[in-house]
Image 1 (tube, one colour):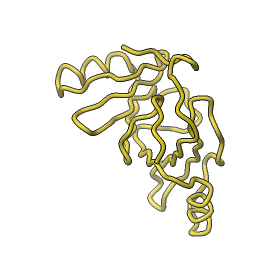
Image 2 (tube, helix red, strand yellow):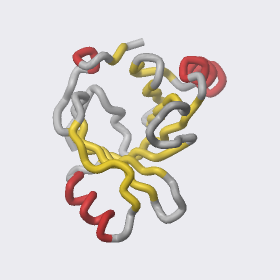
Image 3 (cartoon, one colour):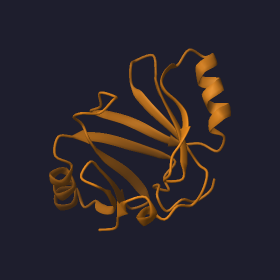
Image 4 (cartoon, rainbow, N blue to C red):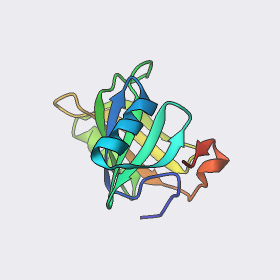
Length: 134
């Protein structure tokens, strides 16, 4: 799997929604010992703990209603998408490539849980698309 400075390196990444992203980051840092790795405006933050990762996102005003989801890094997104679709996954967002070096799609499973699958397509400096290092 390619490395991308704009993406956590973990294979499976929980995504948790909060009304106040900055407050959640401060609390998760103080209470649980997470560290912020990358800030994306005021609506998203990538955090780490040991070799694990977590993404904190703004829960309100999103196109996908989100209190939690899971992001999974894959090596061949289009093949993964075809497989998921063939097995009846409810597609929320079709595969698309983004300026932060990832190609992603989002689906819901049979329990209604949101899953975003992501393939690194290039190593992108977070500062080149507006990311902020803490």
